[in-house]
Amino acid sequence: MRKAPDSSKSNLSVSPQGSSPASPTPAKLVAIVIGAQVCLVKLYSYFRSSAAYRVRIALNFKNMPYEMVAVHLTKDGGQQRKPAFRAVNPQMRVPALELDGGEILTQSLAIIEYLDETHPEPPLLPKDALARAKVRAIADMIACDIHPLNNLAALQYIKRQLKHEQPDIDAWYHHWIIEGFTAIEAMITPGPYTCDGQVTLADVCLVPQLFNARRLKVPLDGFPKIVAVEGSCLKLPAFDKARPENQPDAE
Image 1 (cartoon, rainbow, N blue to C red):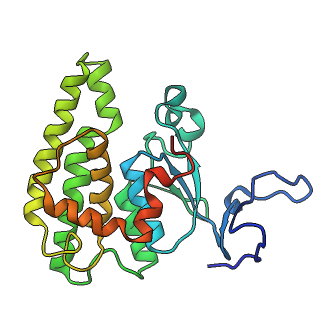
Image 2 (cartoon, rainbow, N blue to C red):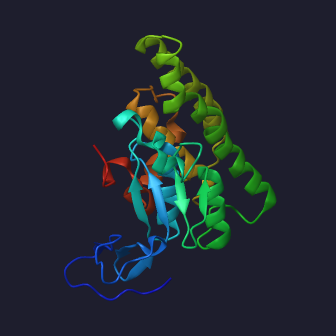
């Protein structure tokens, strides 16, 4: 990680693109300076996106500072649908991670596994193959089974194209969360985290899904182990800093 000059005024500064015509800054070198670290990765995020929340946790856990570009998913008809963001991710979804060479990574689990492979300490996947498979199983249950049925695009389609009322949409949302959480509750091993005593990809996926469940008022009384894992994770700075309410674009 390259070092930046110390700043006596602030521990957070932005080097805006085009701020000095005499010395233009290449787009890929636009960076946020956090403390003495300069990061050359750029995260396209939305504060309430659980998929972007996962990547924020992983970046924090790896102690990797990053520039954040807010993409509002409901304002102006959805900023993800604008040509500027379509050029970043043709799927029109967040997160997207731009690397210092200009390459774009999409899909939260692919991004996180890339980060884990290129920045292996501290790890988010166990070294043991069996333990790794169990972690991935829980992560996939959330990212592939629960989340796609309840993300913004699916809920908007149910409302706008299928003409369902909000109580029906809420019932749909609650059903899939409860069904998925029932299985995960049974799979959690002795804590404090989802898979024993080490933070893993499973925790990175679980905590954002709990945020969404609370926001949509899903009853969680039947999931004491899940709630306990959330409490343990949110005590860690990597998770706390990634919370939606702690993001610069939070509303």
